[in-house]
Amino acid sequence: MLNWLEMSAAALGRGIETGDIDPVALTQAYLGAINSHDARDRIYSAITSERALAEAQAASERARAGQRLSPLDGVPISWKDLFDSAGVATEAGSDLLNGRVPSRDAEVLANATALGMVCLGKTHMSELAFSGLGLNPITATPPCVNDPDVVPGGSSSGAAASVAFGLAAAGIGSDTGGSVRIPAAWNDLVGLKTTAGRVTAKGVVPLCRSFDTVGPLTRTVEDAALLLSVLEGTKPVDLRGASLRGKRFAVLETMALDQVREAPMAGFERALHRIQSAGATLEFLQADEVAEAMALTAPLYTAEAYGEWGETIEAAPEKMFDQILERFRAGAKISGPEYVAAWHKLEVLRETWEARIAGFDAVLLPTAPILPPNVERLMTDQDYYITENLLALRNTRIGNLMGSAAITLPTGVPSCGLMMMGPAGSEERLLRLAAAAEFLLP
Image (tube, rainbow, N blue to C red; front, side):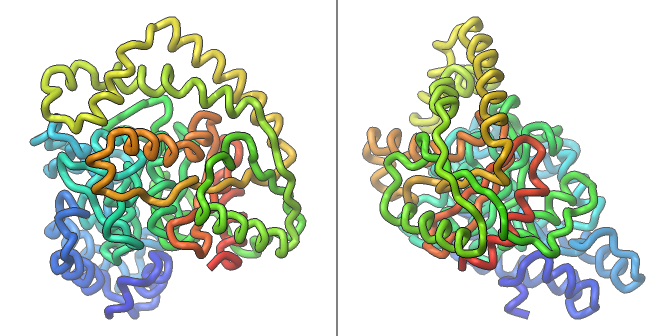
């Protein structure tokens, strides 16, 4: 039974299918592990034991009757604390939303429940999802699986920790500028950033609606593919026969390789060598439109975030972590014409980018140019906080700005990820490429 907590979600689903695993016993094992874990209250903001056991019992009965609803029917997962869950506090890591209890589930949670997923509870996150570090002195900062003294990455920090520490088979998070991929990379997981608008965000507490996306943090690429199908209520992509032989990859040089520190570069170069050895072609790519798009971050992200939250924030600014507060307030300085002009420019840059990468199977870059920073120093050194937060988000944000789909994979170097990016709507292709690369990288 103990190894159940180390198995992939797909493997657990197969065990339920064959009758070797009972969903109730599996859920009890996860709940027991959660409640006995030293970091329980730093990872989970709420544990929905009663709901989980009821859903597991229904899954068990379906399994015995041969009526399973999906390959993951009966598998327990966690949900970031910005997905509405009926009758359970959903506070997005902020005291500004303290006591906010929705009356219905977010649409993706309802979709997952309808396909038999078991909801273990809600996980902690960066305050209002506006940081890539995962540091949250207001509610909780979850641990990083590789170092107790560093942040786990954010904003889906607890989602990553729940999977990395064996307290959920998978976690569902959101990604506005890297919030699935950074914690996935820093905790040696797979993280899928979906195309904006592909997976419904109805019932998800927003940050920047134009960039917000929903995606899974998982142990394997197969799990990510299955979770995507569950979130959407669609058939999963077939990963059989996936290969890198003859594939053509662009290695993005513009910005993505600047200031990359030793360990992330070592992991990236290791991954490139193995991909090339598998029969793929690598071509280094310069793309001026990436740098131009990155310069639009402030007018686009901060303006929209402050437009979303400004009134709520200014009613009680003392409730916020000062670094997050100041980041939001920067958006108040952006005028309407600046915001509109920035969007018009970005739309042109996106067209240039998609034309440039059209001949490649995917674009490769390090997921994050840095390792997870030290918690204590982030709390005491403001310049360090700002520098590390911006660097943590830099590479992942390229995907959000350019409207791309993206996936991060572990490289075999702890807390160092390889990111594959493709044009909007290319999730299925990326998942097949990632499945082929996954066997090369451990």
